[in-house]
Length: 258
Length: 331
Image 1 (cartoon, each protein chain N blue to C red):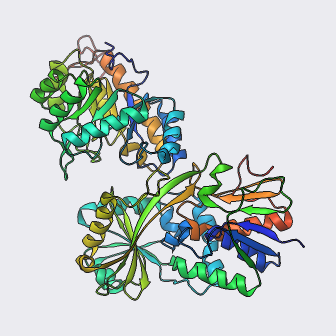
Image 2: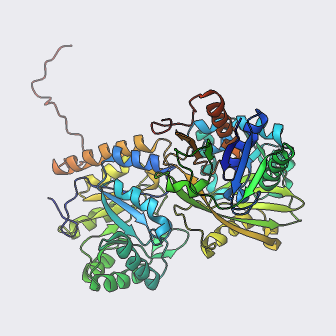
Image 3: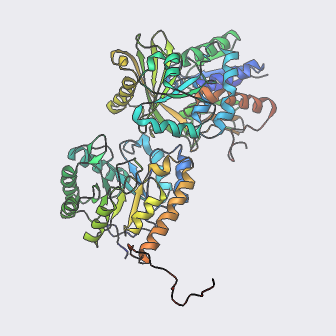
């Protein structure tokens, strides 16, 4: 089933961040190798706000992918809303990845302020991609607030731990069959991305796993292969695990040689 | 022989002028400010000659060409301190050290006891990597030293604004204007850096210390007499606006974590400037008619300016194609 992101169908389920690459040349090479359809851009750091940030912005535009600005590093509703407005002006898109950090050690989202900020921004015409936990009640509130996409975490940002709670992610998929879901944060390896796609998620969003790899372009290619494999596996209706062995070759009638 | 004009008296221009002068090529230098000047971004540099460490996030060329820097600076100044450099991480960021070690070479692993002997004031860390062949210098002293040498050789400095040099100009001109040369180098970009100069007599380091952190890696370079350069942020923008509270907090907190005595340090200077860089963060030398544009030293000004200067001089004297060239380079 193809779920659209505010009316946009993505050619690839890979969303890549643009921070922390050794150089713009390696960033460009990684995007080309990944076939990613979306680039997240942090307004605070790679400041597109002033004219002075335009070189970086021009480079992102040259990638020819959808831009998803984010409110990374925001800690309050006010900060996140202000950043979102700046982002809309600079990048010319209603898309915003909404991040409201509640704890500095785990970079865990403050879900209360997240819902509030999502309400304010949705009412203002933004198309909000909320970075949230895997809590179903919070997810429900986010949808109520106007979000049409949910982005639960796999694990804390930058931790590379993969899917910490596959049970909760599976429950979320089952609970919201019509909502586009993205695993955002915590993905360290292509196998983690494949696992998210196997659960039926619509996309994965990652940054550090590629930007801090020894060879970002090679890692980006590995992620492209992984999401393709995971999506195909989900579409192919995988078998259910069972507790008992089930021989794939019938024993009955087997040649008796000894 | 008519003098070659060098425009820009930052580390690139001064190294090019020094190299040409040493080879007997007459030179004049033009800059809007008398060097060494805070208007050049090299004024704010760390001054680490650390090609092996830099390899962590830079292309292989940085090691290959960076090694020319040691001898060059020793020949032309007496500013080089050959003490090696240390890379450390605090307890919970220890994996960063393993990653750094995998991406680099030319180091020895040092345990806590050895580290304590080497740098007693870096006791907060449990271990690290020692790069024995690396060195550092004080950028302002080194630039002043080059200026003295050039003046002694009779080179004329002209302190004035100058028009953008064009290929059809009458004299051979080396354009070393850094980011200002973006008016002729479309693919040049600015990478903002913020740094702090501290005086902290309670702390003494012999060598630069880099502290790894997934978000806020910092380095401290000793300048002697209790003075340290603490740097440096890397932000993709050409803005020279004042330092942000966030950057300052991050830099100072990291120094404080390395040794709480930095909490008592006197802040002498806060610097902000913008490094010129190309997409792969490697420098370029491009010639067109009578202009040679040498630029893009990024965060490797003192490390790569010597090889840049050697290549420019080889191009001027013998028409040798520079290694720092690309398809647009040499027309």
